[in-house]
Image (cartoon, one colour):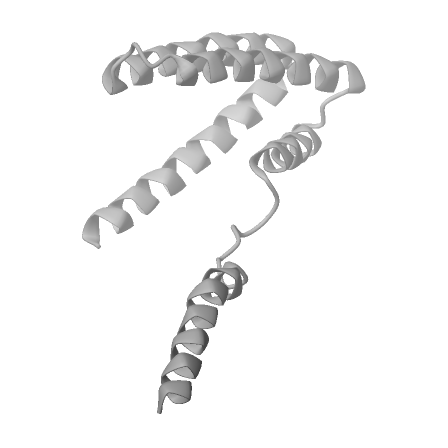
Length: 133
């Protein structure tokens, strides 16, 4: 009887020790590539849709990199409240949107505005769906 009890205790300990290792394989992985790769793909897709020249692509990448640096610094600033951070992020986006628009031709700018409007519509529909849940 004593051997059975020792065996059960040993098996219980093994199960407890191995459970986290076995569960680690069950953790869901995010769908798709990491965020930085998604941004690059989106940038490439938009460049193709707008018909950007190589010079325009280079300028847009530089603008995007500068914007990302400012947004990262803002995100890391824990002294600001959520609303203040959101307001500043919006200002940063507007600043760099103006810079991006300056790189585009009038035709490209009009097409970009159409694309933004379409994305805004999708975002609104998604938010409405999320509210219903």
